[in-house]
Image (cartoon, rainbow, N blue to C red; front, side, top):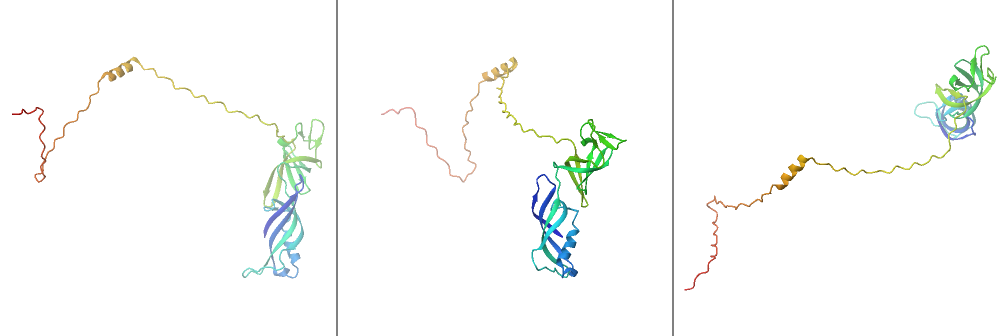
Length: 254
């Protein structure tokens, strides 16, 4: 059976939720003449069990309707598959809720409560109110002001955690006052200015300074270009005729 929760409406600070469910059910051939009875039998199997799609325990169904008057038979299976819509009452406690329950067990390390006559709640000794101690003779927790928490007493608590295993849920609670979160605005802290330190001048030793002065005094020699000599090793190449240089002296006229 597939269940889809398409919408839900929760009461203010209440663990009981009204949810709208759409389900796919398989009817046996014996329920063809009375489909409503067959659907009710299947839905009753889901009651008082934790259901993942609704995130809670389904307590009751109402307004069961068929979305399509015709069903489907898949392959050779004899079951008739139909789509059903229904309203459901869901028990969905969440951490932070303030609820009340009746004490049904008193121990030295915890007390047990019964919520709505069905669901188990455990209050650890560390979550008991300040000033309360366990009294073995009275089988109760007694406060400094004389108030006792005993069997049958109704107490208020805050939901800490909700556990689920094999379709059964249990609740961990606390009877300590809830911590109030401060609403004061925090002052904005401006980032500190970044100061860039100037690099320090490195002092040279006398020895390093003398070596540098000697390097500066050494003259740099200019490179002289050597004349290129053309070597003609190939006898087949055309010889190059060089023109004679002009005489620098003036010739005498006869």
